[in-house]
Image (cartoon, rainbow, N blue to C red; front, side, top):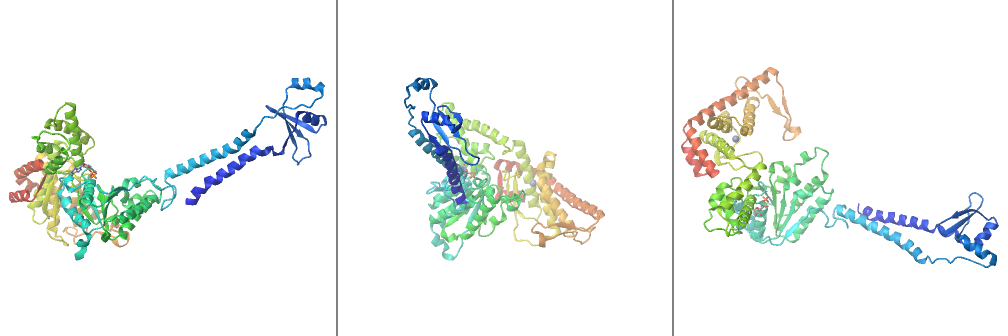
Length: 603
Ligand code: ADP
Ligand code: ZN
């Protein structure tokens, strides 16, 4: 690649210059003669053709075919002067202008023009970022993806509020970077890569910088989205560059923002003919990750909003094998974040931040920072000395309107529905003994599609599931929809994911595990896993009649679960309402709050 880019313009320029000069110098076969000599040649009939120019006259001799004719050139003379001078029989000629400078210019200017054109093209190519791996003359420092380096980020954990759990998990990294010798003393191994998972604006970048700041190490960062649309090879070179630079200044942090833009599952992006650039860049990243030892003191932090679409290769052991959740803050988290950002503005000492925190459900850290800023602007417009609560409420309204437009916030009714829906799951989870324990309930939207969530954790590792357990699982999944039905007497779309999961379980009970009497202990569906990878291909060998029976059996299982759930939740309607109201107010419930609910369930 490299030599071609450099040499072609040069060769073209050379030929153009030579051709041009040939044109100019065809004069060589011409002979300048004086006017009277020219007239003499005419008289002798040597010249058979005359070409009249602006200031000259050319006479062309006749020669046999194939030979070049001689051309005589003379300056044109006004007819009057000739008539006037002829009788005196003197030699006469017109003064020849000095064309020396003109000739020089005709030699010098064209090459100059070409040189300029050549330089222009060179520059153009360099801007496009051509050139191969390692970066040629033209591509150095010209690519869009930049490695940003900060010797000292100046951020500490104090700047990050409301994400205590994430901070706790990252503290270990800070200790390691501060004193890596001590850390490896007992043979413990640090993870190479940690993935920060959370919605935009929840403070992932800030956290990464704070880790670097706390440990006092340099912070290298690069964004996955900048690799898109780059020439093949450049992204990979950039990644290599990044790691080389980082190695030289270890211990340090490498932060890759928007990892999903770069690390999308390779299968999916390949569907339309593939994307070599992304693939090469991703491969380079994987190679580099495998190529360094944590001992070197480099810790990789990645950020993404959608871990589920990442290439599984990225998440394998020894790569980004640890995930840290950076959630949207709940009410107390928002209060902490407000306390951080309020320092930047002048405010009344009695400003009720708690009230502001309760007005801003669903806000991220970035939204809250924006809110403080807006409130200060509102107060300034009113010529106030301090920012007051009413400035915040006014600013909140404006920001909420914006967020609602982009579908990032729920309205009050939706929040109420979500609270009852999640509480329905939770009560069912606590009422039925044979399911995983309920750990946390939240109505803060997480990720795409989930409006709220209930986290259940198994109390022990399970390899076998009994029929009763599967049925209980389906009941828990039904809990959301049933609660909505009892309280609001409606069916909503919020339960679609739950229904899909419940149906899947019921179907497997019928076709895979042979748990239904009518159909017998028969496996009706098998997954051919050996050859076709993890998803395999479903095959079935049964008649239309059996298919109908299966559908009916599945429906029956789900229907039974629905009725059972309905009866349990109806018995606990008061509890459902009270605890949903509590959840609505506090946004997340865990630990003791859950125990209280568990104890008041009527069976
Ligand atoms: P992300 O990388 O998750 O998209 P950022 O780290 O870029 O989010 O956050 C943008 C800004 O929002 C930060 O610079 C900070 O001012 C503010 N912010 C976000 N989360 C927090 C938090 N937990 N505590 C304090 N400020 C926060
Ligand atoms: Zn649900």
